[in-house]
Every structure is written in structure tokens, then in C-alpha cells.
Image (cartoon, rainbow, N blue to C red):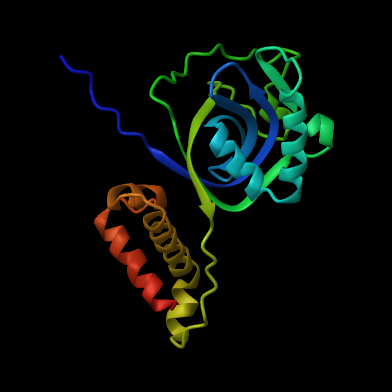
Length: 219
């Protein structure tokens, strides 16, 4: 029997705070970082190739250039495999990437089979050290692969004239409109129709039509 075809579930994040860069003897890099998922800061392992990592460094501006030079110096010397480059420790701050749509997905091979942490264990999960809430029922290791990143589309809607509608639905319609702009941004960056809807959270046809109407309303 042929193996079931894997359809990755895309997730869009808009904040990335890189703590450590891990380089091994493959063409891939692992980033230990924090991001916002479900309105909470969470620690994740993010895999990417060197080309994608260069995109991150360029997108991060001057700090990215500084860290790129540091990493180049490390790689120009004999180094252990794997090598950990602690960004936060050496630069006193995370490498931040904001203002971008960062599309990730969970790799097929990832299974949530790590051991749970004992509540009295002195080695707390790193996300707790960053202020996240501990999960007392299950320790979830969040492992993602980077798919694409691109600058977020700036959405600054003009005030519409339908004041009564604005009073009732302003927040919801704005959120829907922004989802439609996320969808359009994904399409412009090479995603198929179905993938772009998934990235923006507009899989359901009715929800998609509502978002399109909201975007038209806020033009």
C-alpha cells in the first residue's frame, strides 16, 4: 500500500525571537526561538536551510548583519558538530523578526513523544523561563519547518461612512478584512488558492466570503 500523501498544515506567525542558532553537518539549521501562538509566547524549534536563514538575517536589519558576521567568523574556524551559537547570551538580546509574515508547518516526522517534565524538576522548560504558563497535563514540544517569509502587507483602512455599522461591527470587520489581506498576500507570494486560504484561516467558504466583503467595506 502506498504511503498516505502528507499535506502540511501551514501556520502564519508574525513575531520571531531567536535565542540560539544550532549548526550541524547538514544543510539545515535549527533555531531555538520564541513566537506568539494562541496569544501566548511559546518556545519552538524552527528548522530552515541556509538560504532561508540568510533571508531572516537580511529581514532583521542591522542586528541581522551583525549576527551574520559573527556566524561567518564561527564557521571560518574549526567547530564542533553540532555547534550552538547563543544569540541572547552573546548579544544581550534576541534576534527579532517582526513585520513579516512567517509561514511554517509541522514536519511529517514530528511526534509528540518526549518525556513530560516533573513539576519539581529544577530544570524548568525554557518557555517557563521566558514567562510562559506551564502545561501540567502534557509537555508539547513545538517543532516547525520554515516554508516562506515575506514582508507583511500594511493595512491601514480609511474610515467608512456607515457609522452605525462601524459601531456594531468595527472590530470584527477589521479582523476579517485583515485575514483577507493575509490571504491576498499569500497568493501574491506563490501559494495556491487552497494553501493561501489555509494560511489566512479562511478555509470555510462562508468565512472567506465574509472576509472579502469586509475588505471591500474597508477600502
